[in-house]
Length: 206
Image 1 (cartoon, rainbow, N blue to C red):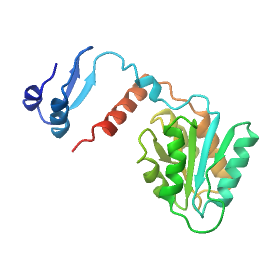
Image 2 (cartoon, helix red, strand yellow; image 1 turned 90 degrees about the vertical axis):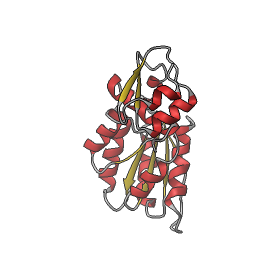
Image 3 (cartoon, one colour; image 1 turned 180 degrees about the vertical axis):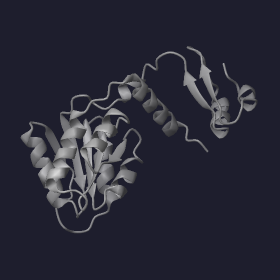
């Protein structure tokens, strides 16, 4: 067991290994976080495998702001043409809407398990990326090409694809989308890093 007293004498910014079955008291966890001490748990994290994005995507939530209408419509049509379920979360008119609203609506579906992946779109894709990443359990990546889309899935376990409607063409967007949803994440070392991201959500470092 690691107590607060133990945590206070550990080197600032270091990494410690917690043996299997070991325990950290709540006060000790706060102290470790404050001292920027990382904790690696010995053995396999039983919950880590569940953090990887769905290997086989069947349902995709799609949302975009008023700049996304043409690209979003093409994506929804393309997904359904592939036999996948596409949840069109809007918007459906050219009236201005705010990207935090559209991006979060799709990201929440992924976080709740109502969709296997999501696509969020605005003019540059940056705002939607930031907004989606504020939803616990959502991991959004803005991709400008197929290489980034593959890395986003395979290396960082992204479950939300962000696109900039002014930065990619329809054809480029669909190619990026296909690469994103067709790339699985299997490597244990990458999945282990997702557990660290989860821990950051639960215990943000100060």
